[in-house]
Amino acid sequence: MAGKPLSVPLPGFAPELRRERQNKLMGLALLTPAILLALLFLYYPLAFIVQMSFSLANTYLSPAGPTFTISNYQAMVSRYLPNVLVTLQLAGLATIVNLIFGFPFAYILVRKVRYRDTVRAFMVFPMFGALYIAFGMRFLLLPGGPATPLLQFLGIPNTSVLYSLPSVVFAMSIFTFPFMVMNVGAALSNVDPMLEEAAACLGARPHQTFRRILLPLTRTGIVAGALMVFGWNLGTFAEPLLLGSINEQKSLAWTLYQRGVVQTDYGLSTAMGVVLLILAFIVTYFSLRYSRGALVD
Image 1 (tube, rainbow, N blue to C red):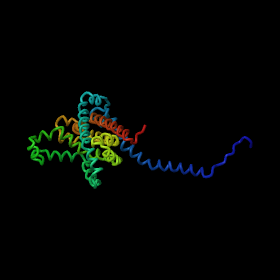
Image 2: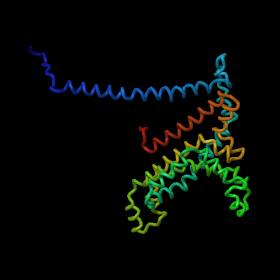
Image 3: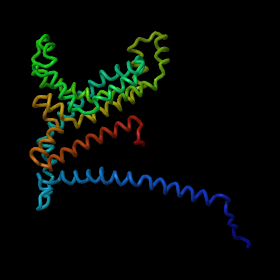
Image 4: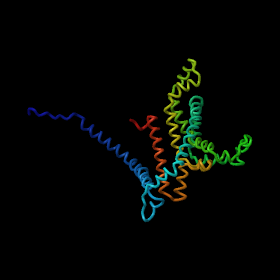
């Protein structure tokens, strides 16, 4: 008929559409268990914690039902803000120590060490837990411990080293040191050694090579490693508890444990946990953004 377009099916077009639809359904079916697990074991507990953080003391689990209030967050601002600042201070100092020692170690590991896989395997041990690192350092620094002769030779009392800010920061740095080295080492592995050789041939000194070549080319790995280390150190409490003075024991993770487990103030302790989660989320966000990770503009 005139004026009526003819509908001619393209050969093979319908089977391709069906195949594409089946692939999408198959991908969704494979993702469904992971989505359900994330909803059940990640997002539901987070929602549960946030809801509990607005309850008064231990009323959330009482038979009479929870009493909701915002006093927990008011207490975080009025009473526990110094605890947040101590937590940020400890994490920041440990990150600086890791930056100072992590870059040279990563450079030697990538450029100089022949059996670097063996060294990486030994570096995994500190990642097994911060608690045994704190116990180990406490054993070393106790009066009569292995470090006593050296401290006596230097004229330093054991107690002044054991219960101090430097011992806490050093132990936290040991725990997160592998994260810094791995991030910086990955960035250094992408830098061609010929660039350093060319700079040396042109008369550049080592500090000039570091400042003009290595630092700009590895800046992403350095910042990503620093943010990762900072985020991990926010939630540690073993080092402040076993190695720190009263000031270091004000860290938010240890205060959270005391309020929640010892004093059964679940409302205030979960509010502290929410604050730690927010801090960790902010650090992770900027880490992914700067390292060109999963978050994109």
